Length: 114
Image 1 (tube, rainbow, N blue to C red):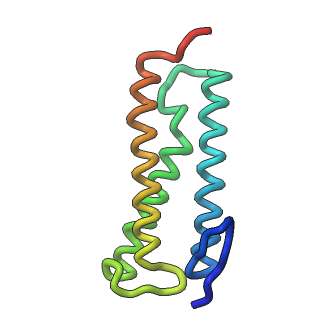
Image 2 (image 1 turned 45 degrees about the vertical axis):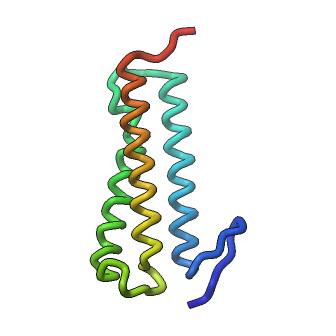
């Protein structure tokens, strides 16, 4: 496999680099969505703040589970799936879960009024 360098990070393959770029892009877009929902609230449903995070959470969970199945729990590494794919996607899903939990609790209490 060829090694690919991006932002000072070394990836095992170009597909790993593309997945990282897509994940970072999704994280940025979902955070912009969240901030816009906080600045310009249209409805008071808490779930509407988390729609992109919810989608990305499940996207990473499904990818991590499929990587576990394809790599036979990380014993077989390929150009598309590897043990790194399992850990990266599990970590990303964990980050989204933490965001759900803590920010959801803050939103339940109510946004600060200026």
